[in-house]
Image (cartoon, rainbow, N blue to C red):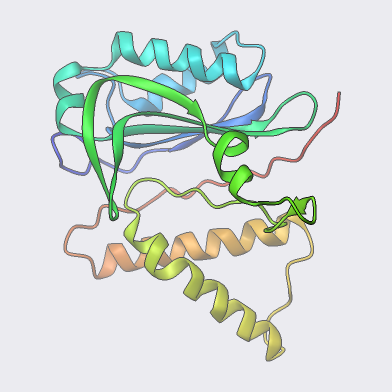
Length: 219
């Protein structure tokens, strides 16, 4: 997005070389007038030189603060999700952004600089942990959405209910592998993208749709 106007379809998800992790972005689509986020991340994910996710997130934050057009940041939300596993198989989720918060489903408060915080262990998983049982309440982890949050709030769980009913009716099979879960996820994203392309007043969600499956690897 540039000056509030949706840009052309671009790749949004990138695997990080040397780390068991990915990075995706939302909002602002251009670093400056000559470099897109797609071009920038394609290079940065290969040449970052970081040894872990925290170092990558901090290095990414510094690079963005130095390079992204400040006038554009004043007008538009810009955020990146860095997620994956550490060398000891611990999941981490780093949120790099210029936004200060969310009002209902809209990002508010756009800074000229980026900040980075780890959101999974320090906040979300803490809320998901049952002290009495010493176990996680939601065994299947967390969903983190970015960009236009409305379809995820309105439709995501409805898609899950539909799929569960189709399984109970014997029309569809329950996912039993990473590949099955990945296909189910891609179906939900395609459904949202299809709605926006055919019915939305501003078709700001499109493609290409890219998914990556990460698994914990203990070194």
